[in-house]
Length: 105
Ligand SMILES: [Zn+2]
Ligand SMILES: [Zn+2]
Image (cartoon, rainbow, N blue to C red):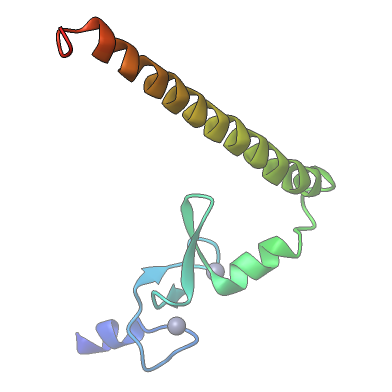
């Protein structure tokens, strides 16, 4: 019984208890060795394999990897710009309501 529990230890750190199982290689890892990548758990080893590029998909994933940060950057810029735009609008509206209101009679 206790043997089954002792088996769930980190592959890299045998003195640590496993926190999660890698869905890719189906091996157990501790919280430090396993990371969340693209919304799913992946061990450091599988992540490295993925980063170096799979032989399965050609070119497309590399292109997506180049475009994705650019798109994220663009979306980030637009979001920041919108935020500042609405803050500016809000700040411009606030004094107007102050003057139109009954605060100063
Ligand atoms: Zn793995
Ligand atoms: Zn570990």
